[in-house]
Length: 363
Image 1 (spheres, rainbow, N blue to C red):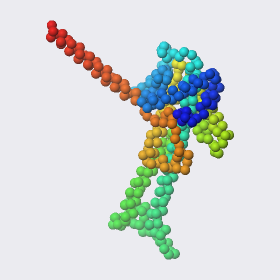
Image 2: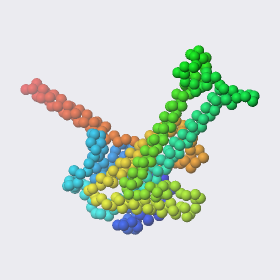
Image 3: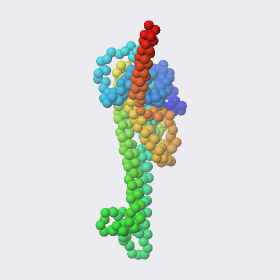
Image 4: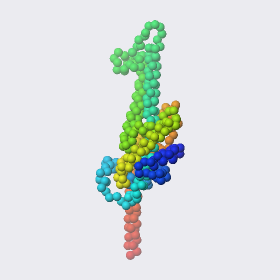
Protein backbone atom coordinates (compact mmCIF):
# COMPACT_ATOMS: atom_id res chain seq x y z
CA UNK A 1 0.00 0.00 0.00
CA UNK A 2 2.80 2.43 0.87
CA UNK A 3 4.60 1.59 -2.38
CA UNK A 4 1.42 2.62 -4.14
CA UNK A 5 1.48 5.97 -2.32
CA UNK A 6 5.10 6.52 -3.31
CA UNK A 7 5.09 5.48 -6.97
CA UNK A 8 1.53 4.56 -7.90
CA UNK A 9 -0.83 6.61 -10.01
CA UNK A 10 -3.10 7.36 -7.08
CA UNK A 11 -4.90 10.21 -8.82
CA UNK A 12 -6.29 8.04 -11.63
CA UNK A 13 -7.07 5.23 -9.18
CA UNK A 14 -9.07 7.53 -6.90
CA UNK A 15 -10.84 9.01 -9.92
CA UNK A 16 -11.90 5.51 -10.99
CA UNK A 17 -13.09 4.71 -7.46
CA UNK A 18 -15.35 7.77 -7.33
CA UNK A 19 -17.26 6.33 -10.29
CA UNK A 20 -18.48 3.47 -8.10
CA UNK A 21 -22.15 3.43 -6.99
CA UNK A 22 -22.92 5.89 -4.19
CA UNK A 23 -19.70 7.87 -4.58
CA UNK A 24 -19.07 11.25 -6.16
CA UNK A 25 -16.11 13.16 -7.54
CA UNK A 26 -16.10 15.31 -4.41
CA UNK A 27 -15.35 12.15 -2.36
CA UNK A 28 -11.96 11.72 -4.04
CA UNK A 29 -9.96 13.78 -1.53
CA UNK A 30 -11.72 12.12 1.42
CA UNK A 31 -10.83 8.64 0.14
CA UNK A 32 -7.26 9.66 -0.66
CA UNK A 33 -6.49 11.08 2.78
CA UNK A 34 -8.45 8.35 4.56
CA UNK A 35 -6.40 5.71 2.72
CA UNK A 36 -3.15 7.26 3.93
CA UNK A 37 -4.37 7.72 7.51
CA UNK A 38 -5.95 4.27 7.76
CA UNK A 39 -2.92 2.55 6.25
CA UNK A 40 -0.60 4.27 8.73
CA UNK A 41 -2.87 3.41 11.65
CA UNK A 42 -3.18 -0.22 10.55
CA UNK A 43 0.58 -0.64 10.31
CA UNK A 44 0.98 0.88 13.80
CA UNK A 45 -1.70 -1.44 15.19
CA UNK A 46 -0.16 -4.51 13.58
CA UNK A 47 3.26 -3.59 14.94
CA UNK A 48 1.84 -3.35 18.47
CA UNK A 49 -0.33 -6.46 18.13
CA UNK A 50 -3.53 -4.44 18.50
CA UNK A 51 -6.76 -4.97 16.53
CA UNK A 52 -6.42 -3.74 12.96
CA UNK A 53 -9.26 -1.22 13.23
CA UNK A 54 -8.11 0.43 16.46
CA UNK A 55 -8.43 4.24 16.17
CA UNK A 56 -10.00 3.78 12.72
CA UNK A 57 -13.61 2.68 13.22
CA UNK A 58 -15.03 1.92 16.63
CA UNK A 59 -17.57 -0.73 15.61
CA UNK A 60 -15.06 -2.77 13.59
CA UNK A 61 -12.53 -2.58 16.43
CA UNK A 62 -15.16 -3.84 18.90
CA UNK A 63 -16.06 -6.77 16.65
CA UNK A 64 -12.42 -7.63 16.03
CA UNK A 65 -11.51 -7.57 19.70
CA UNK A 66 -14.59 -9.66 20.52
CA UNK A 67 -13.70 -12.29 17.91
CA UNK A 68 -10.04 -12.49 18.92
CA UNK A 69 -10.91 -12.80 22.61
CA UNK A 70 -13.37 -15.56 21.71
CA UNK A 71 -10.67 -17.44 19.84
CA UNK A 72 -8.16 -16.99 22.67
CA UNK A 73 -10.71 -18.33 25.15
CA UNK A 74 -11.25 -21.40 22.98
CA UNK A 75 -14.66 -20.44 21.56
CA UNK A 76 -15.24 -19.79 17.88
CA UNK A 77 -16.59 -16.28 17.29
CA UNK A 78 -20.28 -16.09 16.50
CA UNK A 79 -22.08 -12.94 15.42
CA UNK A 80 -25.61 -14.33 15.90
CA UNK A 81 -26.01 -13.06 19.46
CA UNK A 82 -24.85 -9.59 18.47
CA UNK A 83 -27.25 -9.03 15.60
CA UNK A 84 -30.07 -7.65 17.77
CA UNK A 85 -27.96 -5.59 20.11
CA UNK A 86 -28.70 -1.90 20.43
CA UNK A 87 -25.87 0.27 19.03
CA UNK A 88 -24.10 2.56 21.45
CA UNK A 89 -24.12 6.28 20.87
CA UNK A 90 -20.39 6.32 20.14
CA UNK A 91 -20.70 3.73 17.38
CA UNK A 92 -23.47 5.46 15.42
CA UNK A 93 -22.10 7.19 12.33
CA UNK A 94 -23.50 10.50 11.24
CA UNK A 95 -24.29 9.90 7.58
CA UNK A 96 -24.10 7.16 4.99
CA UNK A 97 -21.61 9.10 2.89
CA UNK A 98 -18.94 8.50 5.52
CA UNK A 99 -19.60 4.77 5.47
CA UNK A 100 -19.47 4.66 1.67
CA UNK A 101 -16.13 6.50 1.66
CA UNK A 102 -14.79 4.12 4.31
CA UNK A 103 -15.97 1.12 2.29
CA UNK A 104 -14.17 2.52 -0.75
CA UNK A 105 -11.02 3.13 1.32
CA UNK A 106 -11.10 -0.39 2.77
CA UNK A 107 -11.67 -1.83 -0.72
CA UNK A 108 -8.61 0.03 -2.01
CA UNK A 109 -6.48 -1.14 0.92
CA UNK A 110 -7.71 -4.73 0.60
CA UNK A 111 -7.04 -4.79 -3.16
CA UNK A 112 -3.50 -3.45 -2.81
CA UNK A 113 -2.69 -5.82 0.06
CA UNK A 114 -4.11 -8.76 -1.92
CA UNK A 115 -1.81 -7.84 -4.78
CA UNK A 116 1.19 -7.70 -2.46
CA UNK A 117 0.22 -10.96 -0.75
CA UNK A 118 -0.31 -12.67 -4.09
CA UNK A 119 3.14 -11.57 -5.24
CA UNK A 120 4.71 -12.87 -2.03
CA UNK A 121 3.02 -16.26 -2.38
CA UNK A 122 4.21 -16.47 -5.98
CA UNK A 123 7.78 -15.91 -4.80
CA UNK A 124 7.39 -18.53 -2.06
CA UNK A 125 6.10 -21.02 -4.63
CA UNK A 126 9.03 -20.29 -6.96
CA UNK A 127 11.62 -20.74 -4.20
CA UNK A 128 9.98 -23.95 -2.93
CA UNK A 129 9.91 -25.58 -6.37
CA UNK A 130 13.43 -24.45 -7.27
CA UNK A 131 14.68 -25.80 -3.97
CA UNK A 132 12.99 -29.12 -4.74
CA UNK A 133 14.69 -29.22 -8.15
CA UNK A 134 18.04 -28.35 -6.59
CA UNK A 135 17.79 -31.17 -4.07
CA UNK A 136 16.74 -33.64 -6.76
CA UNK A 137 19.73 -32.62 -8.87
CA UNK A 138 22.08 -33.04 -5.90
CA UNK A 139 20.61 -36.46 -5.13
CA UNK A 140 20.96 -37.55 -8.75
CA UNK A 141 24.57 -36.32 -8.92
CA UNK A 142 25.56 -38.12 -5.73
CA UNK A 143 23.91 -41.30 -6.97
CA UNK A 144 25.88 -41.18 -10.22
CA UNK A 145 29.11 -40.61 -8.32
CA UNK A 146 28.48 -43.57 -6.05
CA UNK A 147 27.75 -45.81 -9.02
CA UNK A 148 30.98 -44.76 -10.72
CA UNK A 149 32.95 -45.55 -7.58
CA UNK A 150 31.30 -48.93 -7.50
CA UNK A 151 32.81 -49.82 -10.87
CA UNK A 152 29.76 -49.57 -13.12
CA UNK A 153 31.00 -46.55 -15.08
CA UNK A 154 34.69 -46.79 -14.22
CA UNK A 155 35.37 -50.28 -15.56
CA UNK A 156 38.01 -50.68 -18.27
CA UNK A 157 38.10 -53.22 -21.04
CA UNK A 158 35.36 -54.77 -23.12
CA UNK A 159 33.85 -56.99 -20.44
CA UNK A 160 31.26 -55.77 -17.98
CA UNK A 161 32.24 -56.15 -14.38
CA UNK A 162 29.68 -57.03 -11.75
CA UNK A 163 30.42 -55.25 -8.48
CA UNK A 164 30.83 -57.29 -5.37
CA UNK A 165 28.05 -56.87 -2.80
CA UNK A 166 30.32 -55.13 -0.33
CA UNK A 167 31.28 -52.48 -2.91
CA UNK A 168 27.75 -51.18 -3.38
CA UNK A 169 26.66 -48.26 -1.26
CA UNK A 170 23.03 -49.39 -1.66
CA UNK A 171 23.67 -52.71 0.10
CA UNK A 172 21.39 -53.42 3.05
CA UNK A 173 23.17 -54.14 6.29
CA UNK A 174 20.73 -56.98 6.96
CA UNK A 175 21.62 -58.87 3.79
CA UNK A 176 22.72 -62.37 4.89
CA UNK A 177 25.09 -62.87 1.93
CA UNK A 178 27.46 -60.17 3.19
CA UNK A 179 29.51 -60.93 6.26
CA UNK A 180 29.97 -58.52 9.12
CA UNK A 181 33.68 -58.28 8.30
CA UNK A 182 32.95 -57.30 4.74
CA UNK A 183 30.50 -54.65 5.87
CA UNK A 184 32.87 -53.19 8.43
CA UNK A 185 35.71 -53.00 5.93
CA UNK A 186 33.51 -51.29 3.34
CA UNK A 187 33.63 -47.50 3.88
CA UNK A 188 30.72 -46.67 1.50
CA UNK A 189 28.24 -48.23 3.94
CA UNK A 190 29.18 -45.70 6.64
CA UNK A 191 29.11 -42.72 4.28
CA UNK A 192 25.85 -44.02 2.82
CA UNK A 193 24.17 -43.96 6.23
CA UNK A 194 25.25 -40.37 6.81
CA UNK A 195 24.27 -39.41 3.29
CA UNK A 196 20.83 -41.02 3.60
CA UNK A 197 20.24 -39.23 6.90
CA UNK A 198 21.12 -35.88 5.34
CA UNK A 199 18.92 -36.63 2.34
CA UNK A 200 15.96 -37.45 4.59
CA UNK A 201 16.29 -34.13 6.45
CA UNK A 202 16.54 -32.19 3.19
CA UNK A 203 13.55 -34.05 1.74
CA UNK A 204 11.52 -33.23 4.84
CA UNK A 205 12.37 -29.54 4.45
CA UNK A 206 11.38 -29.64 0.78
CA UNK A 207 8.10 -31.33 1.67
CA UNK A 208 7.45 -28.76 4.40
CA UNK A 209 7.90 -25.87 1.98
CA UNK A 210 5.76 -27.46 -0.73
CA UNK A 211 2.92 -28.27 1.70
CA UNK A 212 3.05 -24.77 3.17
CA UNK A 213 2.93 -23.27 -0.32
CA UNK A 214 -0.13 -25.31 -1.22
CA UNK A 215 -1.92 -24.26 1.95
CA UNK A 216 -1.12 -20.60 1.35
CA UNK A 217 -2.50 -20.78 -2.18
CA UNK A 218 -5.67 -22.42 -0.88
CA UNK A 219 -6.18 -19.84 1.86
CA UNK A 220 -5.52 -17.02 -0.58
CA UNK A 221 -8.15 -18.37 -3.00
CA UNK A 222 -10.62 -18.62 -0.12
CA UNK A 223 -9.93 -15.01 0.86
CA UNK A 224 -10.60 -13.82 -2.69
CA UNK A 225 -13.88 -15.71 -2.67
CA UNK A 226 -14.71 -14.29 0.75
CA UNK A 227 -14.57 -10.71 -0.55
CA UNK A 228 -16.35 -11.86 -3.72
CA UNK A 229 -13.61 -11.04 -6.19
CA UNK A 230 -11.90 -13.19 -8.82
CA UNK A 231 -8.48 -14.75 -8.27
CA UNK A 232 -7.89 -14.37 -12.01
CA UNK A 233 -8.38 -10.61 -11.73
CA UNK A 234 -6.07 -10.46 -8.71
CA UNK A 235 -3.35 -12.28 -10.67
CA UNK A 236 -3.84 -9.92 -13.63
CA UNK A 237 -3.67 -6.94 -11.28
CA UNK A 238 -0.49 -8.21 -9.64
CA UNK A 239 1.72 -8.86 -12.66
CA UNK A 240 1.85 -6.96 -15.91
CA UNK A 241 2.06 -9.07 -19.06
CA UNK A 242 5.19 -8.87 -21.15
CA UNK A 243 6.24 -6.95 -23.10
CA UNK A 244 5.70 -3.92 -20.89
CA UNK A 245 3.54 -1.88 -23.22
CA UNK A 246 0.83 0.69 -22.74
CA UNK A 247 -1.83 -1.84 -23.76
CA UNK A 248 -0.67 -4.40 -21.18
CA UNK A 249 -0.47 -1.68 -18.54
CA UNK A 250 -4.08 -0.74 -19.28
CA UNK A 251 -5.10 -4.38 -18.90
CA UNK A 252 -3.44 -4.44 -15.48
CA UNK A 253 -5.22 -1.26 -14.42
CA UNK A 254 -8.54 -2.61 -15.66
CA UNK A 255 -8.06 -5.73 -13.53
CA UNK A 256 -7.28 -3.52 -10.54
CA UNK A 257 -10.46 -1.51 -11.04
CA UNK A 258 -12.49 -4.72 -11.24
CA UNK A 259 -11.02 -6.04 -7.99
CA UNK A 260 -11.63 -2.77 -6.13
CA UNK A 261 -15.18 -2.64 -7.49
CA UNK A 262 -15.91 -6.23 -6.41
CA UNK A 263 -14.64 -5.64 -2.88
CA UNK A 264 -16.42 -2.29 -2.56
CA UNK A 265 -19.76 -3.81 -3.58
CA UNK A 266 -19.23 -6.61 -1.07
CA UNK A 267 -18.40 -4.24 1.80
CA UNK A 268 -21.38 -2.05 0.88
CA UNK A 269 -23.76 -4.89 1.69
CA UNK A 270 -23.23 -4.28 5.43
CA UNK A 271 -24.48 -1.28 7.35
CA UNK A 272 -22.59 0.53 10.09
CA UNK A 273 -23.64 -1.89 12.83
CA UNK A 274 -23.17 -5.23 11.06
CA UNK A 275 -19.55 -5.31 9.99
CA UNK A 276 -18.56 -8.84 10.93
CA UNK A 277 -17.82 -9.93 7.35
CA UNK A 278 -15.60 -6.88 6.75
CA UNK A 279 -13.64 -7.56 9.93
CA UNK A 280 -13.34 -11.26 9.11
CA UNK A 281 -11.82 -10.46 5.72
CA UNK A 282 -9.10 -8.29 7.26
CA UNK A 283 -8.43 -10.81 10.03
CA UNK A 284 -7.89 -13.51 7.41
CA UNK A 285 -5.66 -11.16 5.42
CA UNK A 286 -3.59 -10.58 8.52
CA UNK A 287 -3.40 -14.29 9.41
CA UNK A 288 -2.22 -15.26 5.92
CA UNK A 289 0.37 -12.49 6.07
CA UNK A 290 1.67 -13.87 9.38
CA UNK A 291 2.08 -17.31 7.77
CA UNK A 292 3.78 -15.81 4.71
CA UNK A 293 6.38 -14.01 6.77
CA UNK A 294 7.10 -17.03 8.90
CA UNK A 295 8.00 -18.92 5.72
CA UNK A 296 10.00 -15.92 4.50
CA UNK A 297 11.99 -16.07 7.73
CA UNK A 298 12.68 -19.76 7.18
CA UNK A 299 13.88 -18.99 3.64
CA UNK A 300 16.20 -16.29 4.96
CA UNK A 301 17.57 -18.63 7.65
CA UNK A 302 18.15 -21.36 5.02
CA UNK A 303 19.74 -18.93 2.52
CA UNK A 304 17.15 -19.75 -0.13
CA UNK A 305 16.50 -16.27 -1.50
CA UNK A 306 19.47 -16.94 -3.77
CA UNK A 307 17.08 -19.10 -5.82
CA UNK A 308 15.31 -15.96 -7.05
CA UNK A 309 18.34 -14.95 -9.13
CA UNK A 310 17.45 -14.30 -12.74
CA UNK A 311 13.82 -13.46 -11.95
CA UNK A 312 11.87 -10.31 -11.17
CA UNK A 313 11.72 -11.43 -7.53
CA UNK A 314 15.46 -10.79 -7.15
CA UNK A 315 14.70 -7.05 -7.12
CA UNK A 316 11.23 -7.40 -5.61
CA UNK A 317 10.75 -4.84 -2.85
CA UNK A 318 7.38 -3.73 -1.57
CA UNK A 319 6.30 -1.55 1.32
CA UNK A 320 2.93 -2.89 2.39
CA UNK A 321 0.82 -2.53 5.52
CA UNK A 322 1.08 -6.23 6.35
CA UNK A 323 4.80 -6.49 5.51
CA UNK A 324 5.68 -7.57 9.03
CA UNK A 325 3.02 -10.01 10.13
CA UNK A 326 2.82 -10.71 13.84
CA UNK A 327 0.29 -12.28 16.18
CA UNK A 328 -2.19 -10.42 18.33
CA UNK A 329 -1.14 -9.54 21.87
CA UNK A 330 -4.56 -8.79 23.30
CA UNK A 331 -4.12 -11.19 26.21
CA UNK A 332 -0.90 -9.52 27.42
CA UNK A 333 -2.32 -6.05 28.10
CA UNK A 334 -5.32 -7.60 29.85
CA UNK A 335 -3.06 -9.60 32.16
CA UNK A 336 -0.90 -6.56 32.83
CA UNK A 337 -3.99 -4.48 33.56
CA UNK A 338 -5.22 -7.11 36.00
CA UNK A 339 -1.86 -7.13 37.78
CA UNK A 340 -1.79 -3.34 37.98
CA UNK A 341 -5.36 -3.23 39.30
CA UNK A 342 -4.51 -5.87 41.94
CA UNK A 343 -1.44 -3.94 43.03
CA UNK A 344 -3.38 -0.69 43.24
CA UNK A 345 -6.12 -2.30 45.31
CA UNK A 346 -3.55 -3.79 47.68
CA UNK A 347 -1.76 -0.46 47.98
CA UNK A 348 -5.00 1.36 48.77
CA UNK A 349 -5.91 -1.27 51.35
CA UNK A 350 -2.50 -0.96 53.01
CA UNK A 351 -2.80 2.82 53.10
CA UNK A 352 -6.25 2.59 54.70
CA UNK A 353 -4.99 0.16 57.33
CA UNK A 354 -2.04 2.42 58.07
CA UNK A 355 -4.34 5.42 58.46
CA UNK A 356 -6.57 3.47 60.83
CA UNK A 357 -3.56 2.46 62.94
CA UNK A 358 -2.36 6.04 63.07
CA UNK A 359 -5.87 7.15 64.11
CA UNK A 360 -5.94 4.58 66.92
CA UNK A 361 -2.50 5.62 68.09
CA UNK A 362 -3.56 9.28 68.13
CA UNK A 363 -6.67 8.47 70.14
